[in-house]
Amino acid sequence: MKRSRAPDGVRLIAVGDVHGHLNYLDDLLAALVRTPAPAAKNLRDRFVFLGDYIDRGPDSAGVIDRLIELREAEAGSADGAVFLRGNHEEMMLRFLKDGDMRLGGAWIANGGDETLRSYGVTPPADALDTADFNRSRRDLDAALPPAHLHFLETLSLIHRDGDFIFVHAGLRPDVAVADQDAKDMMWIRDTFLDSQYDFGGLVVHGHSPTPDPELHPNRICVDTGAGKGGYLTAGLFWGTEKAFLHAGPRAPY
Image 1 (cartoon, rainbow, N blue to C red):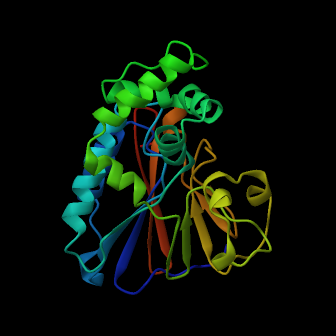
Image 2: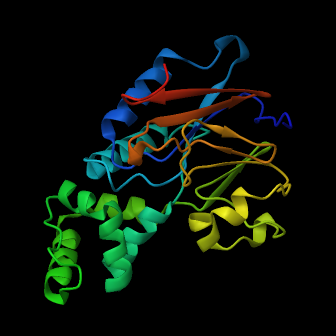
């Protein structure tokens, strides 16, 4: 594998798909406190969250609260923190804004029901019932704190740091990074996963869960299935070194 290099003086922390598991996120943040960046190298931590903060787990609202707290705490830092948009955040926003029953029904069936409950909203008993569907949209619109909506609406799609490219799902081969489509960056799977294409940087992504962090010459996946019975992973990158931290009852300690 190419020895990609992080920016000088920075330890990059790429956090995979949290999927509503606030307890995993808090445990991971606590583990990072116990594993500080090497002081001898004068490293500063920069968080990059890869998206899919919501759905499936029991406390999506709590996860967003914690990420907003972290963003505010890092706001005065020269490095700050980066928060990317996943396909689940995209589906939630589309549910709120478009009212498309097909897309909204898909969101609810893929864990959106748990997100609704975390905001105190009863999911529609039948996503094909227009009145009940629209009732749940109105209830979520009323229950969602303005700060949460702002957070969701201002998520980035891609972040580049040193020799690393961070994105939720991946990139389309044979397309320049600057020309990538937003939908691909949130949704792409096999076309990206099966490719050996050199994107001009090591792509760090989530979206496609694997039992363990998956390392390839052109990409690293840090989605270890927190939303599907797995655990939460963070990839740590400094200089040309890398390590992984995990949280959750099934995490390899």
